[in-house]
Length: 299
Image (cartoon, rainbow, N blue to C red; front, top):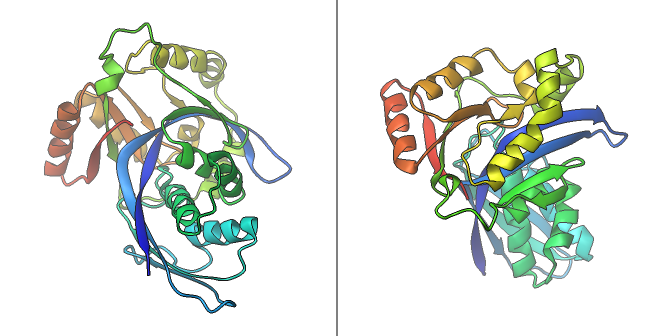
């Protein structure tokens, strides 16, 4: 029984603004996402079928995550088989979790994307990245990014992506090439993405937020293309964030972070540091205070 494994990498949002709700239930967004080295491990085993089997079994090392049809990996597997007209299958999917759940880090979407890549290999479907993204987008808005990786400006519900790269004229290594992030998530907090969007619909941006929404994205993209560690970070969801988020941001700044932001719908907060050693030193300081966090490379 062949088994193959892939890393499922988390993401952080450097920018995230939320527009109107769409007829399909999603919201139009504008976001810059970047993958980081924090990852789950997803393994898929293709077991013998008998020509009529349609069996999916999911196991997760985190008992708090459902291992049935509610799991995004299960949904991605069913979407893959439907897209290819595969009528017989018997697979076992194992998820070794390291990315905190309900944290704004796309842990579930990353797992789903990894499952799609592995199923494409195991069933020799030879699907293009574009096709896998179209399958994944039916399951979750972040899955196309998790399949593509890197740093992308994402629009629509997140599926329309444009790569963001450092200008070739910038001398290397650019500061952003050695930039690292320290991610903190309070284990006592979790945020439902659906509830976060509902709350955001009810709270208009302040005049200061509205001005930054209007001008800030171009400033951020300029910083990134110039190879600088970005300072122009913004996330609409901070308008509805739990109050516990903001002391974490202040603490990261006090430990030397260049800039800080909540990722996704939260409640994870990250700080950008000039290098991995700086991020690890800050991690050790927080660990001494009883705070769990992850020092990660930007990919």
